[in-house]
Every structure is written in structure tokens, then in C-alpha cells.
Amino acid sequence: MTITAFSLPVLGTIAFLGFVLITIVGALIAVLARRLIRAVAGLALCFTGLGGLFYFLDSPFLALMAILIYIGAVCITIMFGIMLAEGDALAKPTRHNTLLTIGAIPAATAILWAFTMIAVKAPWPRATTSEHMGSVEQIGRALLSTYSLAFEMISLVLLAAILGALVVAREGRNKS
Image 1: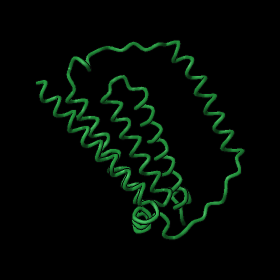
Image 2 (image 1 turned 180 degrees about the vertical axis):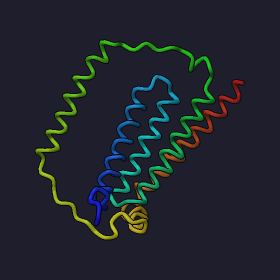
Image 3 (image 1 turned 45 degrees about the vertical axis):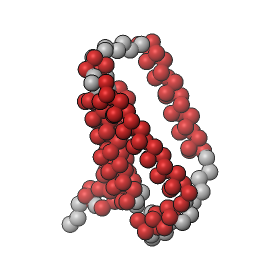
Image 4 (image 1 turned 180 degrees about the horizontal axis):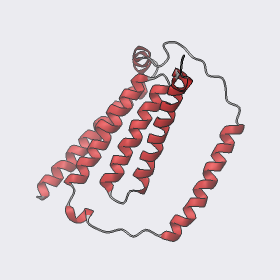
């Protein structure tokens, strides 16, 4: 006798909804947290859920890259920046405008409703699926052939960001 509550499609749906919940909760923590460290932790949680959602889209490579790059690089770099910042800059209390928050809730609800209506009523083309779609080999071939110019431009932007970070770090050392 098999228990249908633990069948593979049901468990897959539960796992998918779990990753959606992790993503939404992480995003809410990132937006609503009053302390910057907690906001970055919420962002990392959101990116973890995003990696899980990429996995459900049959792209484990993108899932791993999202986790490695967004959590392992971006969130950790932001945390280091927060911890290395001056204490006076972090200690300033902030006041929130309650009227603005109350006004933002109906505006966000209206925008969410509009996007939902557009998504529901829009004609969506059928997705073409391939067995090897999104594989590491296909991504590598596309980056080095079809999208080689974009790949080189991204490399230059990353190089500029690294050089800028080095300049900022050197100026910070000279001040001390």
C-alpha cells in the first residue's frame, strides 16, 4: 500500500513551494530589516531560495552559480564592507515615515495586482525544451561563440570593479 501524500510529484511541489517561501521571506527580511547586517542575511536567504528555484527550472549550473556568486561573493563582500565601516557611520539612528509606509502598501498592492493581471491575460508562447538545454557545455559554447562580445564586456566591467575596489581600499588605508 502506497501513501499518496509522499509521492514524487507531491514532494516536488512541496519543495518548490518551500523554495518560493524561502525566497519571499528572505526578500521581506532584506527590505524590512532595520539593521544592515540583518538585511544582508535576508538577501542571502533570498538568493538561497533563488538557487533552489533555478534548480527546479532544470538548470543546476545556474543554481550553483547563483549561490556561489550572489551568496559567496556579493553578500559576503557587503558584510565585510559593513564590518569594516566606521562605527560612527553605522550608529546613526534612522526614523521611518509612517505615513509613507501606509501609502506604500496600497501602491504595492495595486502594482502587484496589475502585474498579475498582465501575466494572467498575456498570451504566453510555448516553451521549447531540449534535453541538454542549459547544460554547462552549451552555456560555455554560447559564451565563447555567440555571446563572446558580451562576455568580454562583462569581463572588463568586473576588472573595472576590482580596480575601483583596490583604489577605494588604498585611499582608506592612507587616511588611517
